[in-house]
Image (cartoon, rainbow, N blue to C red; front, side, top):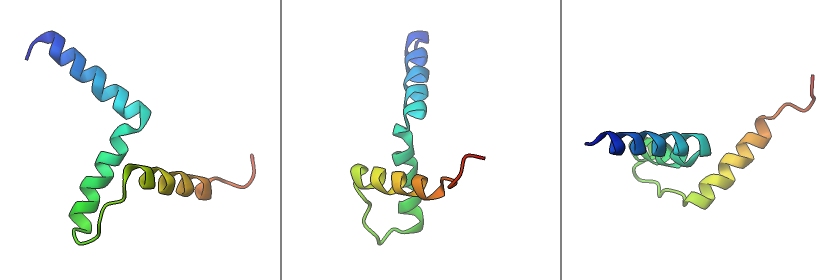
Length: 63
């Protein structure tokens, strides 16, 4: 692989990590490993679940 290709690959990896795009891929890998008989949620369903979970984990006060 050329230096430019490696650089573009690194940039792609970084952008996917920062934007959260890679979260769904990691979730799918874990889900297939631990629950192979259960169908995977779509990306949209995953985002809803992830957002709802984040809102529930949020503390109720600022301090």
